[in-house]
Length: 269
Length: 229
Image (cartoon, rainbow over all chains, first blue to last red; front, top):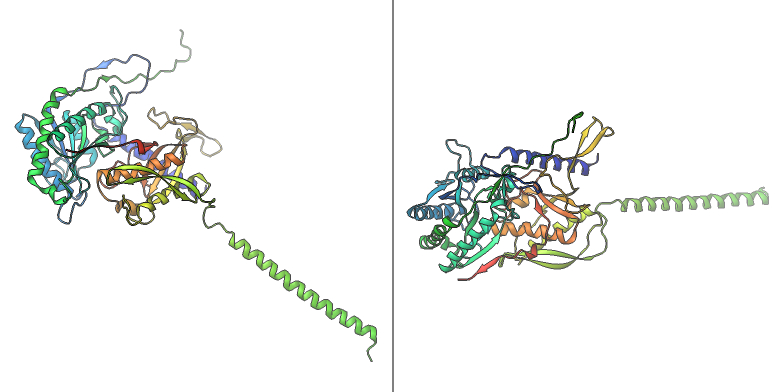
């Protein structure tokens, strides 16, 4: 076996190991992509869907500082600050806000273990929120950048979903939420970019999920720390979520496709 | 007194000795030249063809776009080496001064592996002769869209990944640029995965997903919508 073959084998092993580990991190809340089938699949009761719950994920935290906006401004601080403002505004409008972290330290509940991206997705999926907002910040561009998953949408949700594509059944709802947030921010005269991106862990979320990236007000990156600017953006988002809570529709949940069983030897027709 | 015929024989022998000496010298030089020529032909780099027109999908941070741009580049003929050289040229473009998507210079791609789809493994006997190739039973296993479709596994260097700028857009543009360039130049590639130093890694620089399998597609078509207030 030459060197190239050995390297290729190592790559395959790495991928196989990862596929296994990705499957073992599955939480009970995740649901699966619908395999194509012509058979009639019974619909299951829809998963609980809390129309008054919103999940906020202030990205990064702890040793993960995210991008460095300037010498003294870190992305993790901006996302935390924006999340607190959004939480206050949403709570005032009657929402229950679940946050993946509420301090700089991003650790798992009751343990000193660092919060992994899969843990954040697990927190979100257990809460069954009406919207999941992953908050980020950047010094590039201006205004607010809103991204939804790049996964191709599937019409229904099946009971066993690969962890890395759980968002596929919710992409249509995420797109509607993206448009609604975009309209609200445009009305608030905030420059806007709407696009698609694969940002961990958005593809593993079983809720309408968006990545909301706060960019500077103009060309000055220090405007990211401007309290009034953050409050203005948070206000527009909170107003949009009030409209959204009655519009969101969870996808139809289907039972898993039965695997065809092989006939036993000697069985009579 | 030496007879005349003995002198003739003597000078003939001297002449023969000189001729043989000259012949040996010339043959020795020829043999040396042959060895030197063989040493020069030792393959140090993959054999490159002549310069050809190659389309690179270049990212632009200012407007978040991917633009197809043609460059004259000499690429190796072997497909795996070609894919790797293509990506090295692409990422070297971003290290040039004034690049619209500035990235750090230096080697970025360690290896590119092309694996035929669907992925198969060995099963059965203990030796290669008795084992058989079997397809995965996993219904979610990677499947080809067309016969001959391949999965490209791009093994990035950690030095490149660790120095990559952090941000949703900048990281996504790097991945879209790589995916679009491979799609344009190597259409047999249907799916693309990324490793960093041979290991799976969650994100490129804190944002863009490196765990998922990306479909190979035209990324110049994926436009973002900008709305001015």
